[in-house]
Image (cartoon, rainbow, N blue to C red):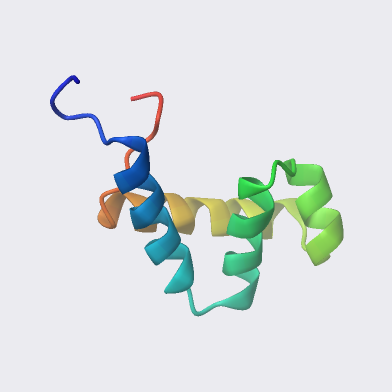
Amino acid sequence: MEEGRQNGGRRRQIVQEFVKNITDDTRRLVCFLYMNGYKDGAIRRILKIDRQRLEQIKTQLAFDLIKAGIRNSEG
């Protein structure tokens, strides 16, 4: 296995721990919906938030994921 890559099990464990520790319900729901294949438009409708608010949440989540050591699976 290429050094520097996270294996699936470890990555899953880190993500589960990350989501478990999110205290904001909206952010936690956004994570849950993305993990279950929902697209931006559906998430905005379900949570009744506008495009700008969703972008703010996504930006904060991306920053927090990097801080938690979760790398993009494409990178």
